[in-house]
Length: 108
Image (cartoon, rainbow, N blue to C red; front, side, top):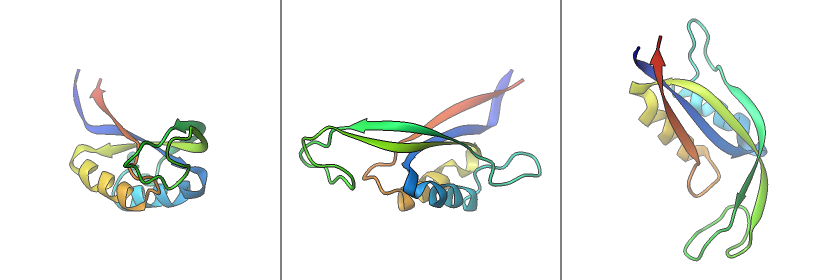
């Protein structure tokens, strides 16, 4: 097995912004599988957080625990496009810090 030229990107976003995030990610080159583009898997999730002093929450209040219905968006992305895709996500995402996970993949 060897390291793949792609990674899996996962981002969590409030339901209200899910379509904009998928579009931005696809426009930046994520979500390509063979001859298909804009390929995503989306599932409902609940995000929990407590903003601390110095934060600037777009949802919730400093010092108060908050739960938000979110969408977990998963897709594939070429390693050469990861930085551009993350910059695009950050520009569109409503949170102060976009929660993005990057998983390396292996080719079999």
